[in-house]
Image 1 (cartoon, rainbow, N blue to C red):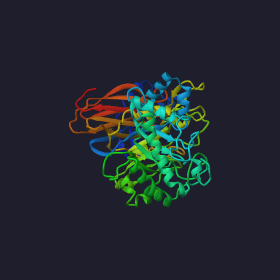
Image 2: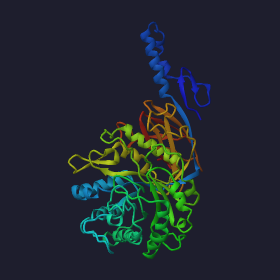
Image 3: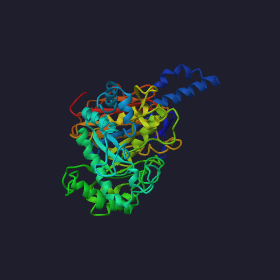
Image 4: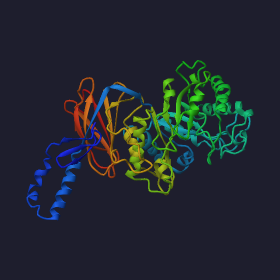
Length: 511
């Protein structure tokens, strides 16, 4: 695989440290009169500029995708409504809210999200310290908004808990850690089961996946501390038995029904505590999803292979680029940073699902949401990171397979905390649908130069004739652009500077 800089009529191959002949550039003929007049420094400078432009425009990288070689099933993409459902429900009128939900979840006109992450509120006004614990009268917004989303698009609903109710904790507070008191383990398991059951009974909302603890540890926000021994005790002796008793999960974990249990949503992308939990034979068969976040180091290295070996799905369930609060984040630069991190998670971390943090945030926290509220909080606008996210989420649906592709730049995510390696310019990943007759290729060019990919498609019948294309750049937002012709399984993909483009083709169809 080649990655080179063009110099004159030669191409210097950086990876293989050799020089290969480069075909004559036809653009040079346009400047023959200028060549004959190279009599001064100014014309010499002009020639140098022309040569550089021509070289950049004709830089090409070979990429092969194999539609017959599936690597990982994709479960989808999502974001959270946590903490903002009251604003969604009270500040946005019904029509605007419907438009917002469409912008997030519609697979044709919106970002196409397929997962909705909902927070368990642990401190409703009027809550009881005895069963039934939850008083929905004072805080119905989570359930109401989840109902509207489910009615419109029925995404996978993931439920996460940040902290037990304060009265169950040793610090009597939602915030700054604190631990669940052992005498309340049974009550807390019942509280969590009640929340799931109430969403169905009160609002008709079906919960698909449940995370008993978001980011275990001491945080300034709502949080709770758990040792590994405490997690094992709570899951094995309290939560799992209670969920079985309430009909939320099967007693026989081989049965394919019920709420998907996931652990343990660590703040950083590591599986140390998870692996210890999965060593317990009374817990491991009941856990279906290994989940974690990616804070602390944006370019996370591959892990969770123990979970994969046990047949667990691996999900990245929350991320935004922390530390950029107050900056102007509605830029193609920030959008492509998010795109590079997503690319790395698919290519190097081999995840089944990728979540952003918030769907929509208030002003001042723009980097935390895919969409932001208008300043008067009566409307919304999709941000660049939302459009970049949508270049994946609209086109890669649950059940799609990530497929093998020769990728000259498998570490496009490197450098997100500093300057990008100048040798890392393009990222490519490829996917097929459930029936294997649709190809999706996503290409990122995070440089100031136009780039080009020589794409070769290895598939079952070689009948893809055209690939439609959608692009996000500084001036485009998931905009349909000129389709690309495919001839004898080969196509040329032209990538403008600072852009992400999604190409879609079908076998047996000239789109």
